[in-house]
Amino acid sequence: MATHASAIKRARQNEKRRQRSLHVKTTVKSSIKKVRIAVDEKNLEAAQKALQEAIPLIMRARSKGVFHRKNSARKISRLAQQVNTLKAQ
Image (cartoon, rainbow, N blue to C red):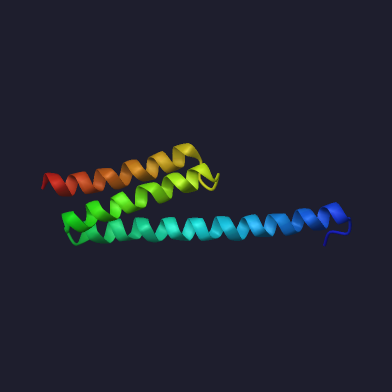
């Protein structure tokens, strides 16, 4: 455990950031899951709507530094690709 005042403060800050990042990550995961479920059910309208809701959440996580920029781009690309294959069918 930290003993210096600065180390105690740093531990407090890290815990707050960890909790905030965890909330953002779980929100993004839930939105991605909604898109994948809609694609599995072959429901194009629901998949497109869920994708439009998921993209801003992923971008917001990227801007907050929770995801790396390439990671967020990969997630968006893969989700869009799944929805587009559903559209092509």
